[in-house]
Length: 136
Image (cartoon, rainbow, N blue to C red; front, side, top):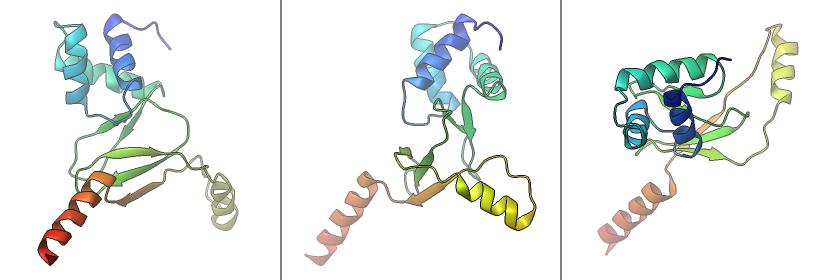
């Protein structure tokens, strides 16, 4: 790991202070408040480097912009199918699944990622309100 530039340190600080799994554009807007001269390309370049170094995680979903996670400990996520919000789940990680799959298949398993999907509290509440209005 190399010494952090002030830009990389600011990006990492912004990302680790957020639990929202932000996009590069959102991170850029936040860092720009602290470092007005920073460019979007610099943010992308540093996010790539931090990802390669394993200090952050990049999350993808088809047709969506990459999102970033400052929490590199193994953990599960919930993604809202309506608004796209990603939430860390405080659930124990089942690392026995890796051993079971490796034994059963002969594959060399190095990790796993679990993402539950559905509606977040806000979107679910919005659905409930809409249903109640229609029924009245």
